[in-house]
Every structure is written in structure tokens, then in C-alpha cells.
Image (cartoon, rainbow, N blue to C red; front, side, top):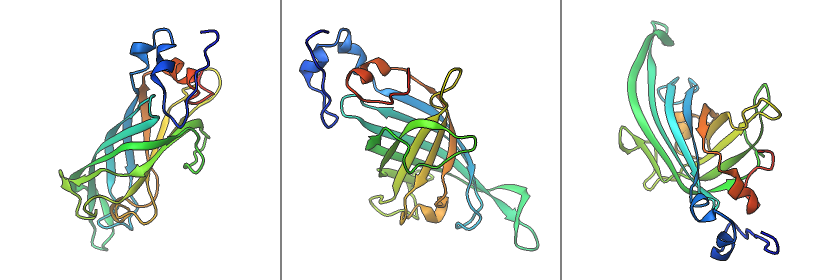
Length: 215
């Protein structure tokens, strides 16, 4: 609307600004929702490793606060060992267990600085950082985690650029230095794929929030 300048200060959007956007009453209350899968292996150096890791994840960003909620639900299983004491892939599926991981109200940064790199390269994207609010092992607080949880987590989402590209395709989940969770998952990025997202970019652009590269 002419004569009205919409300002997002420290991620807080005023009700007046919201009312000034045609159609904003419903659309801007819809979080940006992302979802996908996790598939990776832990190092052999972690306790009980190497582990196969498979799971699904969701991530939602509140356009009013700019904060995110992240959730990952994973299965993990290991290998038996051969006569030499080395992991034996023919004895897969040992010590199967589950993990539920949550980040609640975490800070979103709209750049990939400090995120893991890929080959071929990915571009743009965002990251979410914070202390986990939940980290379970078979439903209970994980035996390697503190009470309350103290492990920190970085979640990075990135993708392609240019025509015929997918702007959000890749995700990594990395536990921070000193996190108790490293003893089980390792300190390396845990990789996954973005399967979908709701493309509610118009409202974000009007408030100056979100990746400039997404058209």
C-alpha cells in the first residue's frame, strides 16, 4: 500500500503493520513449514558405533517472531562384530533404538555462514541454532544427555540456485562442541533431504524477512 512502510524490528511485527497488508490477516499467521528425511552413518569411534541413522524431521518458522521449532524422530541400529572385533555388515540391525530430538523457539539466521559444505555446492538457505529442549533414547531422557538437556544443535537448510533449481534441497543436523550428544551421534553433520515446504514467501518479503534469492 502506498504511503505505508512496513518495518520488522528485531523480528517483532506490529499489529498495525499486519493490518496494512491486504490479505495478511490469514496468510501471515501460517508458519513456514519444512519437512524431510535423515539418512546417514555415525563414526565408528562413538560408543557402540558405527550406527545407521534414519529418520524424519519437520521445521516451522513463525513469521511474527522469526523463531523456529525443529523436530527429528530417528531410528538407529548398529552392527555385530567379526572374529577380529571389527563391525560386520552382515550382522546389521543390532541394538536398534529410537531418538526424539526437539528445538523449541530457536533463533533463525538467514545465511549459511558456518554451515557444512557440499560437492556439488549448495547455495543460500538458513540455519537454526539453540539448546535442545528434548533428546530421548527409546522415549526416555537419553542416558548420555543431561537433565535438563544441554546439548546444542545447529540445523542448516540450503539448496540450488538459478532456473530449474530447488531452492531448499539439503539439511544437516550438527551437535555443538561440548554437547553430551556427541558421545553417541558424533560431531560430524548428520545429512538429510528436504522433501517439501509451503511457499509462503510473499508475507516474509514485505517484512524484510527471509532469503532474498527465493523468487
